Length: 393
Image (cartoon, rainbow, N blue to C red; front, top):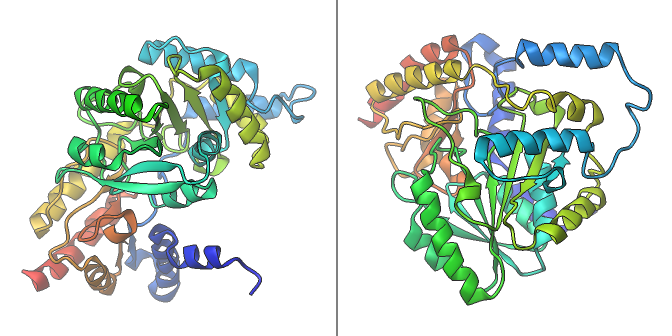
């Protein structure tokens, strides 16, 4: 066989999100798109803000000489300065342009960071439920994933984290607001985590870096605000993209921001610039570096997602599903009426409702529903949810 045995094995465990998305395409072709209610993929429904599109049109209509050439591997200095200034303003952390690495989305930033941090056999702690690609990102760079369970309400379980962090732990991945649960960790809980990591760093004799994956940091509801991870722990790298907040998932533009307090700040700047190049990203897309530099304070209208959340939560609660109401992002992670989430998924499919099993996120007995869809799709699905729940009740 031409492919590696490892990749063959990983392919059998590959993301359930894509598998179910592809099942949706098959069903839509079979019975018609209007009859299928697809909640599998977190593919933003909102278009980029008009003021951003105007910036984009201007750059395309008035190109400057050399605008499509290579640039420094960490990104345009002017863009990095704009990002640093925005983060300085919103978090109070004295970041500089040199702390910012422009990347091909948050996935690129995560891989660039892990490549810079890990030696073979080093451990990275993730919190279940977790974004499935973390497992493969960590393996890409010789690391070992260690799972710490979250609390019943999906908050950080400090006792579980304390047990998971050992002498080989080099990093912990946080994702807040969270995919798949929508949970946002409070500033107080993050400080408690920072205190724990400080103790563990003393025991291990090396930094333990928080990789804070925050593509949903602007998509928070009910007047809440995402706390600054820089306030929780010195050794931190903030990772984000503009896929969700500006609605640019197909353009693959994001960045990593190294904390001004990270004890290895200087060498991390060099290492991550190096790994950005050697992993094959080379640099983030030129056009979108220029345009997002002027859009750091922009966002899609978050109230649209909040209204969709509320509509879906009410409808599913009335159907009998148990839901922890999310603080942000655009996912629900309800508990299934039985422990077999795949059986529940199959029952939903009979109603042409597509969801992702919680097993794919490391938490069986749940399903993930993405509500970045139209109100019509949510309303149309609710009778089917009720019929399935009647079977279980």
